[in-house]
Image 1: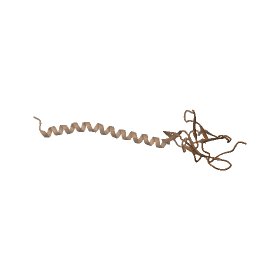
Image 2: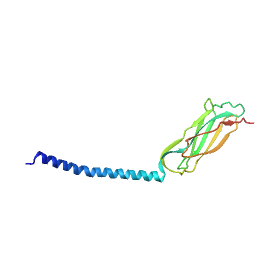
Image 3: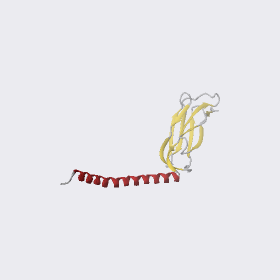
Image 4: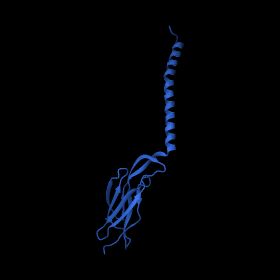
Length: 158
């Protein structure tokens, strides 16, 4: 009949037989993670939030009086990244003449120092009694998501 000590020894041996392969797998997995992390860091790739559709903000003013214009229609036309699809967003200026069109961003891998081609955008501002204002601009996919434009001055029809 087996003794208590021999049973304990057998159980300990069985436990060691199960634990050793598991520990080896964990250590191997840790090595893979370290090597992969080092490779990504050395290659210049790292996760980054990039802009897929730029946004814009600004203030619309009367060119003569410099007073805020409420109710002007602001249209932003952009080309999204990476599909190069045209997007059109429209908003109306607030009581203080300000407007904001929100941007869209996504997470992806960024390669240093590569920055994909800038995103093309154009803004159009219309208000009855004023000339239409148009401006083209570019934004970086890795820069600020919302471009802050200088004051937009609308001139009266002549």
